[in-house]
Length: 477
Length: 95
Image (spheres, each protein chain N blue to C red):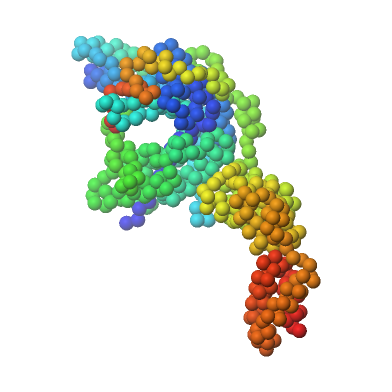
């Protein structure tokens, strides 16, 4: 029996505003408990919410980036439930009319592109945090996070495998960070994912019963949780049982999902429009204003890097993986005035190697775009060879200064003086008469040996092309 | 559409309201009358009428994204029944 899995993701992206969605309290992560929870956030009687314009702007920005329709009037509702980290007894969220309507995102997996539908994206506020460690049999509540603005992005059930789900999640992550609307920090919970998973027999037009996996906060765990859940559901059906609609939690230590609550006991949220908040009006002028702040988006930039700089798809992908990386590359190309493909190689391969090794972001690179440009220039003007340049980059990474400083300090300047190279060659030949005879007798493979000896004698600094040419002449006799 | 007493009890529980048996009958009756009124309104043809989420026409007022609230934890926690290490303490909740 062939099975097909059907997956939809709900992603909560925390909007990177300075203040809360409905109050002027700070949103900084990691503050002392309850020092960023004001009267509105802790729901003292008589307070009223006032919405953060920047959060509206960020939601619209996202909508435009996924080609979605922007609802000119969207409505905040109350989602009612009782839990101590939700002091009002309701969460303000958009229900019937979200700010962002249907859009889409193109994902790429194993060289194939697929368009994934995004049903909607709506604004809402986050809840606080419950700490269940034992406080003399009580629970501790930190409301610093309460009221932080979130954008919940809901996909269509268009994803067909755990790998596709991760590709979609990564693409969305890249996009919100690119747009500057979310810091994307998954450890701190700025980007969280709920996954709706069901299975059906291949070709069946009807969806199976789905389970929702709550709050998974890493790409790897999303993939593992979905894979486990698909297997679990197939096993259930194949053994004659059926899938129950329920909420499940992923346990990373055991690598399995377990039931949290079934739909029968699920909460009835009794949504209704929040009487404290008139509709959010987003007029044409507002949309145009936001449109003007949209950066060039990752896909468009990747395509431009391929056509404008002649890069291959892979390098263009690496160099547009983040806005900082793309800007770094373009600065380096501009500064070096050199071959964009060579610049790309030094960043996408060599520098990226160091970044990955030290687990650093391009923004934290000790080697600036200007310094990479300087390095590429010294290769182009024959001051150093590509091989020596790797040594220079290593020193630059270690903080020993820019290319010129490293070359001067370590005496790495390439030897291009014909006389000096000839002298080195003569010495090498004089020391290796046996090999010379063999070479002249037809063992041409020994040419490499001589090149090696000359390079060794010049500590790698001789210009390789000149060495080749001169050596050929001298060996011929 | 009308509500029975069980439904009223369930709604009261969801809203954490305590109501007596006698009250549940009375509420079932009055809430059913409200639903009747809504049914009447539902019967009106509203094709082409824009849905209204709020009685006045004004849009939401927005504020600039600036931190305007200073930390007042001490004052807030002075009236809380129990606090520790900056946290509000509540009866244990386990999911």
